[in-house]
Image (cartoon, rainbow, N blue to C red; front, side, top):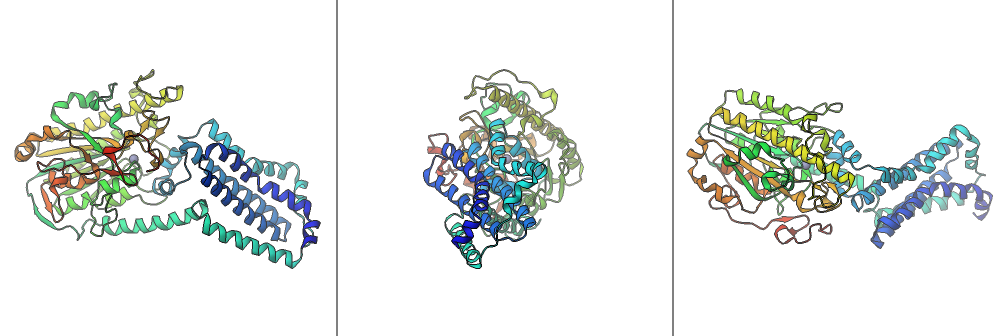
Length: 552
Ligand SMILES: [Zn+2]
């Protein structure tokens, strides 16, 4: 055993040194970026064990060629693991989270690349390059100094040496699985995929079919009606003129203000699209996230004898189907504009002709769901050049830098363009002159340097601008006449509301009473009752004092 080590000492040392380089990078950046000691220890521990296993495997291989290939693969994997950790700690100040990984599966490829590219900058790029430094060094040697790899030619080792090595590796694997499963990205990934598939099957089973037997309609209206539900994306009320923002981001809707019912105190149940919409558009809520008798607003509209349309500017499939797509599947007519938009950016105005088409069908009872790409990052890709309107520094920006100035202006341009799109859709419905309504809300907001030195939305950075969403509605004269009970609507605008209860407001709007319907949870009802608004991991939104509370 000792003989084996002595004979190969130089090789073993050199191999260990090379394999440990990503670990060294982790230790160095970890000292600066991971402020929790236990977490630091766990992160380092996990990479130590993975490095040990990989090194052990190389030591066991006999063939020089396979050893060389393994060296490259393992070095790359280690560098990648450390780079991913570096990215998350640097950008979000947190470990790679299940929710972040979830998004990677859930969102489409384009959004994922946007998600990453929008957070890349020189510092993080240098950090990631540093992780891959030895890998790059190995590649260079492969071409210019192949002799470098001679150290991989070991002297023959004894069986005792090999058995000891295997035992050590098995032990490392055991410890890794037991104590570091939280930290190990590989294990986390496989756990997340499992969890993800369970969730996916649940949604498919309950929400994908047009007809859902869990819906028990007690009474419904038979009148002709036209309803439009516009689902926004990443638009915070903090940047909307309608809600008191100091820039003209709502020139169109402001003109329409007299006819609008603008609700001032509505929050999103979550700051991530999928987690928010799976509550907003279905019966589930914070207390009951995965109820047995779940159904969606689309299925409810089907059951109430509406012709249903789902028109979307978000990609329906990426790595897999996303939850909003599953909900959309239940609609009788579906149109996804962004099925192949890797090369193009489709502005939301492309939805307008599709809404016009949907308005032309003969049905007297019709519900159109419009899913915008809204003001999702990267902001400047959300509006045409003609909407490049804002410049200069907005005094309200909390962290004033050249970068934040640019992002705030781009975001405000996108909000202004969104204003145009929403207004155009309302205009179409106005022109129909029917018993009709339009509701608009956003799935969540973004924090654009409003309360923190950060742009975008992320669970670990969850702040008020990410939860505070616009929620407004427009009703035709016919609608208001036929539904006298909402005469007093204008006095409802300060109701505190969590959009996870939207299905109750929705059924109230279309005059449907179903088993389980709770009028007190409809923002449009005279019998509305204020409910506790629980977000994050149990935080009461209404007593939330500090703006950022990553612990919750
Ligand atoms: Zn979203």
